[in-house]
Length: 158
Image (cartoon, one colour):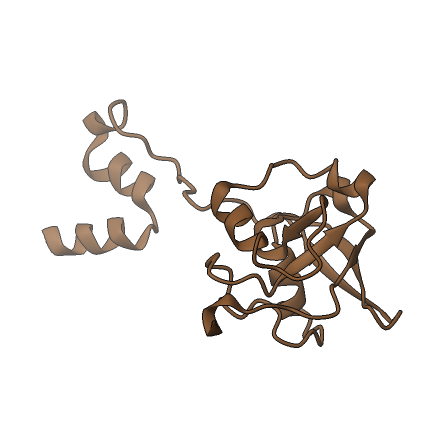
């Protein structure tokens, strides 16, 4: 008999009714409403990023808030040779990107020492250079245009 009650309780069907019929004294002591433990799924707004190649070609892609620029390249199959070879582990500089000054100033975080060490090894380094794996998209960065250097230096192969 207990196993039948247990089955009803575990199935989530009729739990309040079971309490009412078999254990009325428990009604005032037990919580009988359903509890949702999952987080609501919110649709994130798509943000646009344009990668400007040395050839003059512009490649546009979309990402969601919180995606790194490396994620945007990978998820959209943007054809950038060798980009993100270390998969965002900060052991190469192949996702080196050059920002316009006004966009660079909008970036929420300053580069870490580890990122600066990798950038020191990148080709065409500028004052507004960052690694794409370290930049997370935000609404402030929507419609971002970023220069992709003509060549990359994969320090892992040195």
